[in-house]
Image (cartoon, rainbow, N blue to C red; front, side, top):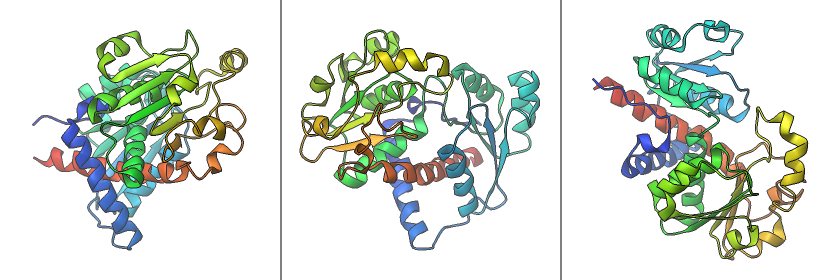
Amino acid sequence: MTIRHFLTLLDFSPAELQAVITRSIAMKAEHYAGNDSQIFHNKVLGMIFEKSSTRTRVSFEAGMAQLGGHALFLSPRDTQLGRGEPVEDSARVLSRMVDIIMIRTFAHDLVERFAQYSRVPVINALTDDFHPCQVLADIQTYMENRGTIAGKTVAWIGDGNNMCQTWIHAAAQFGFTLRIACPAGFEPSAELLERYKAHIEIGNDIHVAVKNADLVTTDVWASMGQEDEQRERLHRFQGYQVNPPLMDTAKPDALFMHCLPAHRGEEVSHDMLDDPRSVVWDEAENRLHVQKALMAILLENNKR
């Protein structure tokens, strides 16, 4: 039996990604109605964290608990992986003891190698290259508020980081146009830009990117692991702030998203997160439900 993993949005077909979101919306309704199923009864999620987190840990751990399962939090201090054990050996051992594994780390090749040697599904909960769980939640949030994202225009403002690169995958998988505006030298992967050029417009002007967009989204200017670049990035990213006047140039029904945590006064103005066009709190909550749906589908596939 082939084990299915979720390391990028490309691991699922467009129809399968849509199925995850549809199921997530249903699970969200069940949760609000107090009818959470217990489909994770006797199931254990191993959570490997090399990068710290609030939303990722709470959403995965709460999701397992709500559906009758259990989650184990494993920091670098808690595992031999953090003391130099080969990734391949850790994968062989842990995957014999738990039913599904999520990893939040730096190098994307670590989750790829872990998945290669794992006997259970592995989920990428963030690497330096991609953050697919977050963008799934973002797409769900757009669908709940505005319907299908196919054929729409999404504006990405800021760093060409893991979120931006995942939005590139999303543009291809969900069929929308992604306009990227970032400072020179902070573009996403050149290989990704070339491969998905039919879905992407890229430049340095935030006003060109946002004009008549259906969705505007951004992230912090310096991500985790880039703290030594903070001062330089603050200088280079001046002028790349999303604020209400910029949003006024998007479509009248445009939405604003941010994966959080946000640095108010930097990539977003102090009032943008609380603007009526902002759906950041719904977006954050949807991490919980979309990850429950994703885990359910991966566990069901692993039974076959």
